[in-house]
Length: 300
Image (cartoon, rainbow, N blue to C red; front, side, top):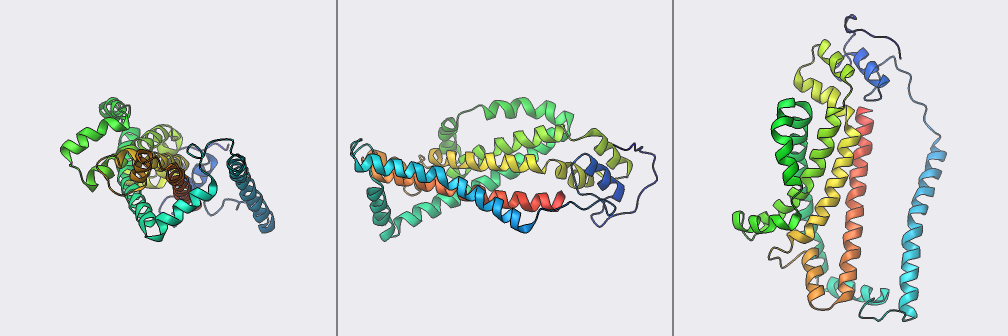
């Protein structure tokens, strides 16, 4: 790595508002985009990228197909009783039965809305707390022990308090999901910001960047991969907390459908609900993956 000193003459400003040499310096550490003098990255041929993407998609389909084949075979040979392992046909019939009157779509829409609202609220709070703890020694000293203790509380332990203070309504369900989404984002952001390269931060200060400019132009771009990882964990946690949230006097939603099916002995609907939760969780995770590509393109 070439030697650089803070006493170097200021470089011309780039379009992003930070000095060009700061971008070049941060690129040396692998954190942000290189300046105008940096060598552009060499991209793989389009055909090669498409071939690789197609191979990855095909590989990802193999295991679900094998699982479905095993499920169908076990059901067809009656190796497991129907009341314990329903056949794929009976699960499909349950989906058609619930979908014919619009009930299934209503369950899906309500649960998805709860998850997305709770995920957004919890992620924003987690990002703010993580930034405060990761960037401030005083913030870390005052907040880390308490937030760490709250993080250790099981999800179901929050249900009685939310019912008592928020009430048996939609707000309590969204609040529980937000609690589940908060802690993964807080943990990853706080830990990542503590380990941003000190030389990069010092160089930004030498160029006269304010605390806000330093956060938005240097520190946050440096931890984009960690933020996205935290968001993915938070989204998975939000779907996990959904079932607990819909135990709070719910009459609609996939969590309610799962518990109601268990109480009524409808194993086919239980399998259907679990499959839908997996599909919805993977779909929303793929959307976070698109956000990751945009952020990395914007700040890489």
